[in-house]
Amino acid sequence: MKNGQINVLVAWPGSYIGRRLTRELLRHDSVHLRLIVKETQWVDEFGNHAVEIVESSTMNDNALMEALTGIDIAYFPLRFFGTDSEFGEISRAIAQRFLDACITARVKRIVYLGFPSRGNSGNDFIDTMEDVGQILCSAPDKIQTIWLRAGFIIGSGSVLFEVLHNLVQKCPLLIVPRWMEKKVSVIGIADLLAYLVQAKDLPVQETFMADIGPQSLSVREMLQVTSEVMGLKRFFVPLPVEARWLCSFGLMFTSPFSFAFSSFLIGILQKAEPVPLQGGQENAQHYFQDIAPLHLETVVEKAIAAIGNEQVVSRWTDSLAGSSCAYDEQDLSNSLFRDIKCKNFGDTPKQRIFQAFTSIGGRQGWFSFDILWRIRGVLDKLSGGFGTSLGRRVESELRVGDLLDVWKVIDLQEDRRLLLEAHMKVFGKAWLEFRIEGNTLIQTAYHYPSGLMGRVYWYSMLPFHVFIFNDMIESIIRRARTPD
Image (tube, rainbow, N blue to C red; front, side):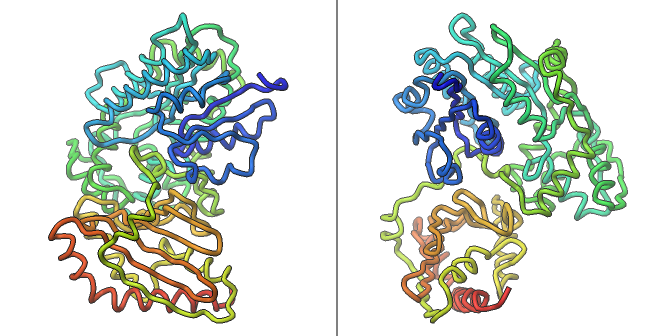
């Protein structure tokens, strides 16, 4: 400890939970905070706070030791989503490396957020969360682990909330297959953060497990509550089969998810444990007596209010495994194809120009040819992507790492530059850049093709570029000159 403070590490604070947890810990004067993150630009928002940042993958042993040296409490990377076959293997390897490094660095306590499970559920995500917990608890004589198990999180930007919100908003008639009748454990994001923050001070001396968030509800019940909170009358039609494939397809088109992610999520809902397990709830009630979990109605109300007030701190997209905002300027220099548009904006303040091009997408759309972008998004959905239904985290701001319709923000320099990387199938790599130089706006589309199909793709898009990109740069300047 330093000056009476407790030294705390949050590993990968750019995730959905990690970002919010970091904000909560910064409210505590007793905490000296250190972060380990793959790319520092993910956490630029914390740069003005008294935090230490170590940039590296958690698989790097030297960086882990640097990050963990002098640490009292270490939060293991919190809740990532991986749909590929290697997700489980990589997660287990990271857990073992993290445990070994914590022991070597003499960390006093690891805090881990798992998922309710009895083991061997048949779902890769649930079983991986269970295995990671077992690994982190495997050396109780050398280090203490606080293992909190929580089910689905409901809050602005969370996966399950976006399912509920989108289905209720878009579907007057809701088909309810059997998996929607199965009860699952849920917890509000504010309650979850309260448990995680208190876990660092928990008065226990040994490895400890607790099941938190004891509400168990079916998806149908959650949809009913959500519709009541939103003031919408919805009709439910039971379906006596699982219909996973059909539901995945339907969820793909009513939510911001790809088909693979929809199927992944439904698979978890089908296999999730409905109630706390083996005394875990009693532990939570005994050691976290001052936390009274909010009822679902209140949680949903708070989530909807956060969206309306543009206060969505983080989103599920922040927790996609393997997600990165790293790029090399050399990649742009080496791109084979470019479409460059330049426009002098005269005496219009550059701050207004920057504000105009960082407001594109989402509900604001893509100017005159927004319909073409929406069609492109549908094609991306059909080819396995997320499409333009991802929208924006909030309409009023962007940050590095945000997904913006079919793009990802990979560089953002105030009043100077926005660089987007294509998050859709483009048969290679593609970027869209807006850059201010003097009183000139430079808009550049880059494409680095992969094989013959990449070249065919670029040339097939050229006729659309003529309309779309000319209109875009003109519209950005026009928007900048329009009074608020």
